[in-house]
Image 1 (cartoon, rainbow, N blue to C red):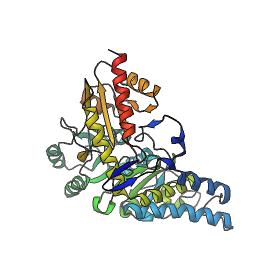
Image 2 (tube, helix red, strand yellow):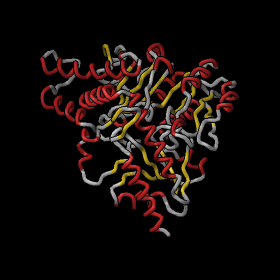
Image 3 (cartoon, helix red, strand yellow):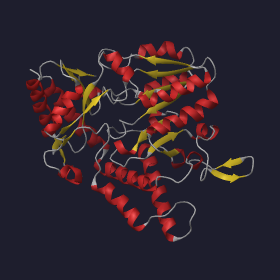
Image 4 (spheres, rainbow, N blue to C red):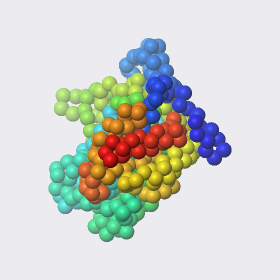
Length: 406
């Protein structure tokens, strides 16, 4: 339980997994735990409404279709998109690959430029490497400064080169940095570039308004936003999506099929080949409704308070280096750190003995690790169910790590 801005955010009892005694789950940046509302929504679908969607006219099929499309409608409205511009994929990685393959294949040519940032997740690097290699295009990166924030002055000379696309993470999964995506989109559009924003970490943590951000593509994933695995979401500008070729071919994404050619379905189904992740979409819709009931301003305030407390307590641990912006105002609910003389995996293993669940490794950001000058970090990431007690358990555990390696 945590008191923030005069309100109490007390939701830990809604997460069945947290009934495990002594568990301090600090790995939400990897995957969020699921509240009972999500579990029950998926259980209800599978028990009472399970059927293939969009084709059947019998009641089960109609009910399943309504639940599936209702989840799409809810997710789109929540972030300020539209249902026809909201595409379901396997995960955020597939959503970015969809854009890199379909949009990149149609638009990138030899000598073109794609601009990314040094803090991107591999999911927003490797697909563009593949797309640029196929087209003969070039990749360039906006650097970060010593506090883990983008050097936006370095963006200007790159934009002067007329890039075809700028890709940027909304909130870093390593540094926690919250990037000024509205400004970046505005500047990139003025230079004639399309923009893809990776919102995987931002959507569960921050109020997000896609109309204000105005990116051409915005991606996120359900399982980091208290929903199930197996579902990613791509919000795309309708006119851009309509001009792109399909990513995958097969059933459901077609209007008609002849021996030699096919006509494709209207948005969003043009990009949703095969049987859809029906239960996963329903679970995502329940997660969105649950977050809406909490209120994203309250979610942000709660996690901001926890990160501020964590930064304060971590500052008291000797020989510990914290990466990213020094204040909670400039970062999301993630704190990565390194303890001098101790490998991050050893830190995580010793913390785990006391039920403190953190992530150790390169966090799918190996280029960023090289910029930071470390092979890996230990990362604690916070959620709506965490409290100061979890932070205290982390700090106590770090002191025990130092004792072990003294």
